[in-house]
Length: 268
View 1 (cartoon, helix red, strand yellow):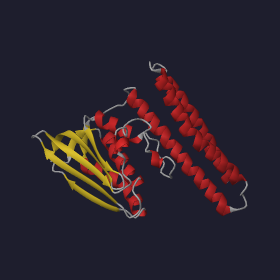
View 2 (spheres, helix red, strand yellow; view 1 turned 135 degrees about the horizontal axis):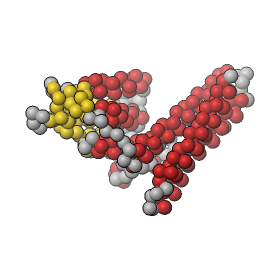
View 3 (cartoon, helix red, strand yellow; view 1 turned 180 degrees about the vertical axis):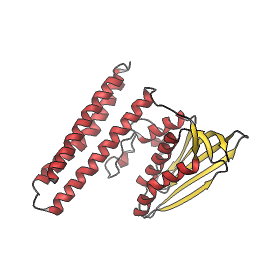
View 4 (cartoon, helix red, strand yellow; view 1 turned 45 degrees about the vertical axis):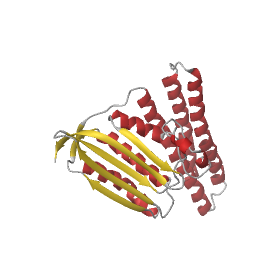
């Protein structure tokens, strides 16, 4: 039964990969710069081909260990993890496609910043604890209800905190600080800071970190799973809310990313 499930998972991944390629071919066929189009599709297919081969290999190994539950469970776990990474790449690619084709819908509504921040923290706190990281939170806001798109804000903060978690080794520290600077009776500037004591970025990489598929060379062959699309998506999401993003990083020391938004105040 388990091996059947693993085969199904592999087939689903292959189908998703094919759909993704077709979607990008259709979305970008009108692009004038043909070289960029070819490079973009080549990168997508390359990033999908490696996990497809891995799933195929682990499926074969699993089929030979039906009478060895421990090994079978190990192979199935690897297949599941790789499938999740592929799905993340698919979702990131679709998000980027929507942004680049101006199909991202922004809906401003009354939003509780406290609720949004609390939900983001809930999504990462268990993983931070399991990795034995210190988690420092400081929230200083006076006006808690503002006009913004709560789903986009949530995605921005979750992506940044997930990155901090991903690139920070055990026993490190992640800091999440939120500050409000009142501009007038109707609006305030909110600053969200995510800081980690992770591997940091080189000066050269910081210049291209917001480009699609940007990945630090020293991390390409590690166990850190990355599509190279996350920061590009975050930057575009921040700009969709008319905010700005600031980056300060040093290799071997860590990274601090700040996003600033001017939000219309609804109430205290």
